[in-house]
Length: 350
Image 1 (cartoon, rainbow, N blue to C red):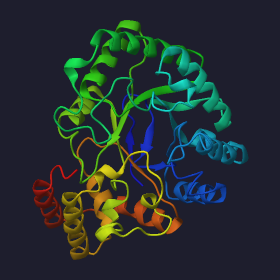
Image 2: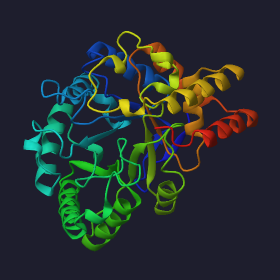
Image 3: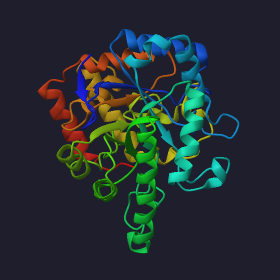
Image 4: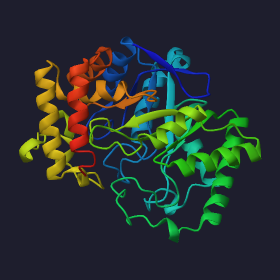
């Protein structure tokens, strides 16, 4: 396993980050225990979770993934200092989460205390804002005029962000979090937070996690350049584009137990004809080079300049074994060239 600095945090994280959003719906405690142990045995020291997990989110399961991790930690307390745990506070969008309230200094304290209790730990290594309070061009809203920047109240948004930074500063001072990060944000969001941290004397964000994969490369090069130049770790989530890049959904297939057989709050916006055509092409490249489609997508993501650690997920051990093995692979130049040709042809397929 290779490791990279997590931005300015001083932490060194594995190039693989173990995602956990299936734990609690598609996976139970025993499954999660096995995945964590396999990941650790293979050098993974980085686990990502969130208060809104598992996915698909619901009021009945809210917080269950953190509780599953907490159960494991309660039985493996000696390993806590060896594991870097990242969790996230939910923004507006769920009536059952703090009455649909925006992220604020006050809600950070409440959400953080709840997460710490579920995780059965005294601190979270990296506490992330799951998405901005403002509407941002993520989750399929990246096409022209889907999000109207001219209609945003920038002053009010900056004031809310200032309150968030103050709340994060208090949490750091209290020792409840070591570092903090962003998720599903933009270059403007990154730089505004950097300005506010400098103004308020609060440590800056050390990471951002955004969707990034062979079907969705909008962060390259502008946001990733900002991350590299500002020493902020870039953490791709959904490197298999919701499972599409494994090839398992080609031709309308819906394998039993797969995510696309379940209710989706959002996510099926990725299912377009252009996206399917791209996946078929990537599967052909993978076959030619003797690796699985998932391994092609993950190994490609890992070799993108500026990527720190890629967040992977699996619903069973064979999938996890296959995915982690991708990070020991080096794609040949012929393979990289073939991928680039396909990427240029299908640069924005959904």
